[in-house]
Amino acid sequence: MKEKIAKIHELLNEIEKEEPLEDIQFVKNFDALEIPSIICSVVDYLFPILSPIETTIYIYLFRHSILANGQQHLRVSVTTLINAASSHHKEKSNISSKSVQKALKGLEEIGALTIDGEVTHDGTLYKVKLPDEIPTCQERIKAINIKITGPIQEKRELDFYNVTENRLKVFERDAYKCHYCKKQLTRFSATLDHIQPVSKGGLNSFDNLTTSCLHCNSERGNRPLMDFIIDKSTKS
Image 1 (spheres, rainbow, N blue to C red):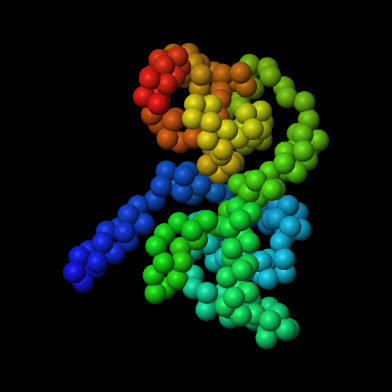
Image 2: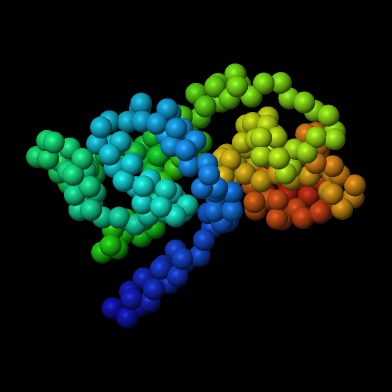
């Protein structure tokens, strides 16, 4: 029985090591030069809705995941978080296992964290979310983006595929949702798909691009749009 349990743990660890498509896309889109704007987004949209201890724990997780290596995942124990929180609070007696677990639960409830792996002796595997992915932050971000984005220039010669600020305009138009499976995405997990494939004369214009998750984009390839949509609806 022990051998079977050990094999199960080994298999789970192997599965955990295989990066999901979303994580691969996050790393691909992540640019260290964006860190200042990411931090501003966290401070402006997330911190105002967190308690002091939730803020401290999120800062620790953010610091040792996204900020450290551009990865959203981090395995950490409650003991480590107690020590981290205690080092940032004068009233150390208020920091306990119960208060840290309550804070973690609060972060999970608002969508700032998700548990993405089995609990081991090294702790729990968490996925640290950015404000772009947190429902309670998204509406305010959207409202502010509408004010600062300005009018869309839809001239066909403009490149909305390779120019970052233009790509964002397409994502914002589509509310960061995959055109095909309707999955909610972020600027780090979203991709652009050509409605008329480039191989068939399609342009990088605003009206020839749509937001897609990496899975649907890869699955479609250069197939005609309607063929892919019909095939996808048949399978679902």
